[in-house]
Image 1 (tube, rainbow, N blue to C red):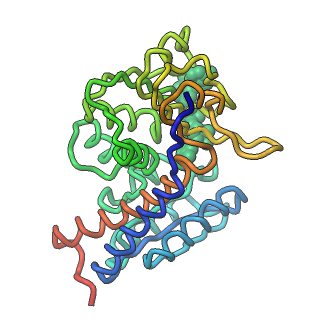
Image 2: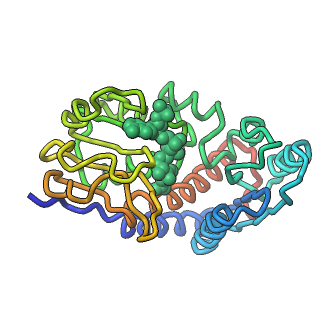
Image 3: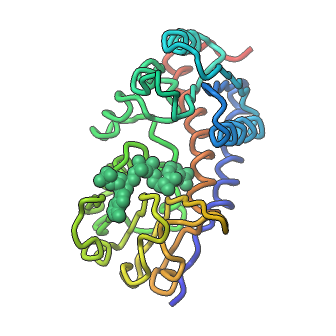
Length: 285
Ligand code: NAP
């Protein structure tokens, strides 16, 4: 058996085309990215998000603040962006410098503009199964499962990793999609006992090939979120040899990664539509 490789790159291009059509229909959609400091990795991420936003016609504002910006100044800037009618979505690039409390910054962003889905109100709505802005990575995974018509109802889903940005939200989304969900983490004993039972296995750990081929159930769908950079390139959490056992597998690179940014752009359009529907935003002239 050799797995069908889920093409995240191709699907992300399709999502971006959908977003571009929606932006054209709405007339104006604005996104502000906020970077504090000059961390090179964060700079690469921000440039990627700016480029992707511009390519779909989103009016992207690139706000950069020096590393020593006082917390109060960042919070005041976020309050200004919340009040700015031209801004539908706000992304605060993490990590923030250590003198700034990340939770404070996240909680200052208007939940209606929180296109990363990190605000506690959005996390709480997700938990309750109510409409919310959901983080891009788990949203992208659900879209991949839907596109490849992978049955979630009644499926045994195992999520390895319990972070707030991937593990927990994807577990909730799978639960809402009627899967029977198990969440594993660093204290889980005999990890393979769980993974071997998974019809859908999501690996969001950040450890090179922590999921070995023999830990994968024959016929499973395997979603590899991991991004592990070595001298030889970018690798996932799942040993690619798992393709011999899995029915579907996301590659690294070219799987979950491209979907994440595309879904954040989608969230920006969702936020713009919701603001217009609620009368909070003026229609584009
Ligand atoms: P994180 O916050 O570091 O969480 C990692 C999780 O893995 C934790 O819950 C941890 O357990 C668990 N874990 C660590 N070692 C383990 C082990 N040996 N066995 C089982 N579980 C273990 O990471 P994250 O932000 O969720 O990201 C996970 C990976 O996905 C990273 O490689 C990251 O770069 C990548 N990522 C990719 C995208 C994308 O767009 N492709 C987006 C986001 C993240 P504890 O809670 O017990 O510590």
